[in-house]
Image (cartoon, rainbow, N blue to C red):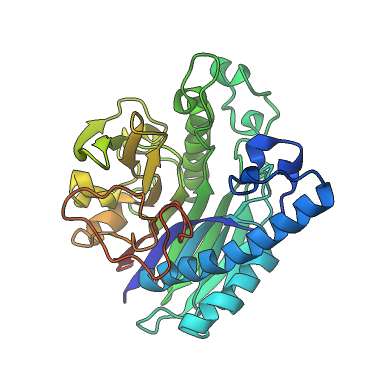
Length: 369
């Protein structure tokens, strides 16, 4: 029995228009800044037209990335709402895969923009094993105080009663072909922008560390502390942090070179320092684990893994020969690929947009114990 498990930050799967750019130019789309729009109603009409035209291309490309992943269970991040997920599945995925993802789960979380984590599931795996949901639990309401995680570093920007998860940790108890499987879906705090002399990653690190510790506690609560290693579980999602990156040095005209670099400080060390879970993407070459290209001009460019399928030690050992796939055909042409990694892009991919997402889906095949 083989299960294909995937995760994908689908990037702003929204059903709402954001008109905040009328008052805040930092939130205004770059194409509208080319025009002198003096009337708010006209601005809103232009923004609606721009978004509708752009969204159709984007969601066709998102659907192509999901079809290429071909997951039985797909964890999603940045989904606006259940109606948004249903409209996307019916209007785009259904046209490509038919009645594929009939089971959908989403609980409204804490994000200020309203983007949530969600799960799409087939009724059966590709090999014909039933996927049955026993329970779904949101942990969006947990606070630092609830789990004893509040500390001096968090106190610089948070209160003890603040919610730990900036979106949610969605926990699903499943049986697949009669075998138990627990799934924890997350989207950790973004790295943000530099401020007060700190880079955005460092300035938000304490929040992600707390989120990672909270996930550990939830897994331990489910199975018992010290009793998690031999269980069937996975933690999936956009961690917004990395333990290594590939520095991209150079320009399009002059050419590029690529240097892998290890990060000693990472929120993900909470997961790996004592082998609590395993990152199977380390089975890929160090230059070929990335799921996102980050660039702010030629002086700041790197490739890194933000999107993870973390496996319990027993599940990782049982699937020691399974290597995650990273679907990069939806990346825009501005993404710099190391030599030998170039892929054929999906039709209509642009230099920066349209694209499937700024993230790449990660998927792998698993045999449950």
